[in-house]
Structures are given as structure tokens and as C-alpha cells.
Image (tube, rainbow, N blue to C red; front, side, top):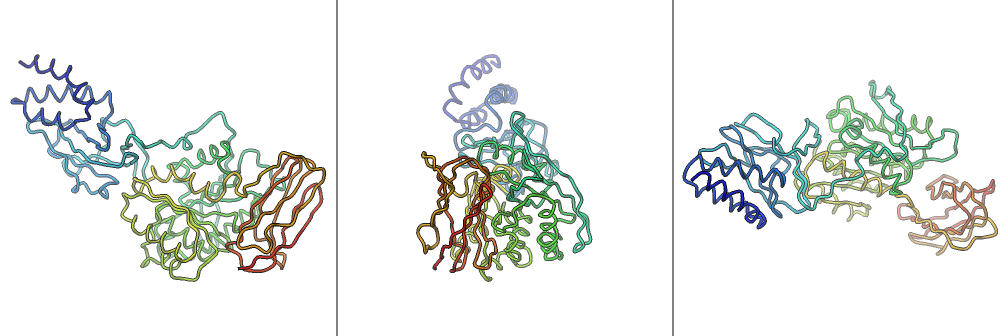
Length: 484
């Protein structure tokens, strides 16, 4: 009889599972009379399931499976706040086979672990896909439409930036900080190029868990972002500095000590519009605080699942209810996070207040799996490869010339055109009536041609401004007027 059952199972599974009917197998198990028959069916199913992949995914359903000795098995993960009491697995009576079917979005990606006997947390032994988390590796559930991030992988065939590792001693904090400075491929300290900068909180984690160095190299090589300098700063006491008693001192150190130090040693742009501060969770909280208190230093803020709840939602309330500052935001978060409502409310409130925010909400959790795959989104928001939409004409001009912007006066955008006779290093900047720089639109070598650059004065006050272009040892300036 047993041989007949096994023969039936082997030749029937292809039909059963082609119909995406895991429950049909479970029903079949319940219909078997003996433990021997059930175990034979389970062994045969496990052989088949391993060829397909475990968890055994059927369209929107993820079938979690554990086949081993245990009194109880539960699942803890992004989808239940890592509370194993929320998701117990059923046991096929008389066997070691445990199972649980859950429904997710087709493009969901989530971290999880199994919890045996209410105490033993383990990786899913049948799932080879692991992902690093803040507390060690987790098993990864990737639904069928989830696209793995290509940009996190090291590509040996492209140019790579270099790293400078240093310790910075803060007089304000009275502490040493580990700092890693990423310099783009081809960086020349003697050149006149001024690079944008991005400052990462939890810097060591963004490198080790977030693959940020690979992300930057790949995005630059693929012309997704312009070349930049990245500064990775690791905290000494994360909770205290990012959300606790020293948060304001830490913000002061970051903006008034660390940034000037980097600017004095590397070819960075000194414009707030060319600096980005970003972080994850509490790192998002301190990024928001720094940008709000020091918008003249950082006018760009990136938020990976920002945890704004500390100190009675201090940062949230500063941005939403305080004076509007010259800050642009980009944010990502997952729908399987406890703070997803907070991020939606923050988005809606700051948009109503007049802030700009670029955001994405994903079927993921509060994890490095989400953040490492969306660092490209934050970088591309603020430093795209052609952030000023420079376009070259097909005709070649016979002289170097700067044209009057159009429209003029303007509100809030205008177009600036110029022509180049020869290939040369070009710098196009905007200054206010006092001669203070407010933006740098172009700073690169360009071939001959006619170029068109869009300037956005949304964050500027009404008044007269000067736009100046320098090339071939010459500088030409013209006036333009912003009226709001």
C-alpha cells in the first residue's frame, strides 16, 4: 500500500502544484490514515518543493514550511512586528511538519525567522536566501514580482572610488568619531571641480549592511547620478546622539565642526543645495533635526523610515508646525512598519506647508533590505546625472556667449542658455544681489555647443539675482529678476 501511495504522489505533484494549490496537498495529508503514509507524502513533497523554492510561493500566497523536531513553531518578521505570538504555524498531527500560509503583495520583500518552542530563533533551514539585519542575518521572503537591487553588487569591471578612513575628534561632543570619506574615481585634489556631498548617519552600517559604496560606484558608472563625495559617520552612542539627551549637541557638531572640516580638506561644493544628510530610523530623526536647525548647511534631507517619535515627536513637530525652512526632502518607508502612518502623515503635512518631498512607499519592513535597495532613490532625487537638464544643440557655435534668461522676470523657473566654441571647463553659478552664491548649475568640462539650463527659484525670495558663466578664462554675467 505504501509503495502505491508514493508512486501516486510522485506522478501527481506536477499536476497538483501547477494549479498553485498548496492547500490541496494539505487536504490530501489530512485524508491519509496512518503516520507512515503522511510522512511518506511529506518527504516526497519536500523533495519537490526544494526544486521550486521554499517558502513555497503560489501567486500572492507564501507557504512557510518547517519540517523538523519541535513542540511549536512560530514566525517572527517584518509583517508582525517580530512578535512570534502573532503567527503560529500549524502542525500536521503525528508528524514534524509545520506550515503557515500568508498573503502578501506580489512585489513584497520581507525579513523573517522561525521561533522554535517559544525561545529558539533560527533562520529558515530550507531557505538559502539570507539578508543582513541590524541584529544579524535573517531569512528573506521575496515575492515573485520583487526585483533584486542590481546596484548593491560589486562590479569589478567599472571604476571605483577610493576610501579615506579617519578619526575625527569633536570638541563639542568631547568624543572621537569614525569617519570614512568616499572620493569618486578620478578625484583630483588639485582640480577646480566642486563635488556635491552626501553625509550618511550610521555610516559603518550603510557600508556594511547597505552596500552604499557599491551603490554609488554603480550609479555613477551608469550615469544615474553625478560624481559625489560621500561622508560616512558612525555614532559613538547611537540612541543618545540621534534621539536622546545629546541630540542637539550632536547636530551642532555635525553642522559646525564636521562639515567645515570636510570642506577644508576636499573639493566639495559649499552650497547647502549641494549637500545631503540622510539616515535610517533614528538616523532619519537626527537628519531631520540637523537640516531643520542648519538649513544654511544642509538644504537636502533623506529619510529612510525616519523614527520621529522620540521626545514627543520633536523633529516631526519642528518641521510640520515650526517656521518653514529652505529644505527639500526625499523619503522611503515600508507598509509593514509600525511607523508607516507617521511617515504618511509627515508627507501630507509638509506638502501642505509648502515643502517638496519625493517619496516611495513599499511592501517591505523596517530593515536594511529596504534601505539598501532605495539609497539609489535618495541619491538620484538630489544628485541626478543631469540635474539641470542640460541639453546640447546639434549646431556648433562660433563664439563663447551667455544669453539673457527667459522668461525674465520669472516665477519660479527660468531658462539660461549659453554657447561654447571650444571644449572647456564650464562653471555656471547664481549669486544674490550681495554677491553670495545661492546655487551652482554647471561645473564640468563640456564640448562645443549650445546649452540650455533650467533654474528653479522656488526656495528663494523675490529679488535681483546674477547668473555668471566662466569658461576659457572669461567670465560673463547677466541680471535676472525673481518675482513672487
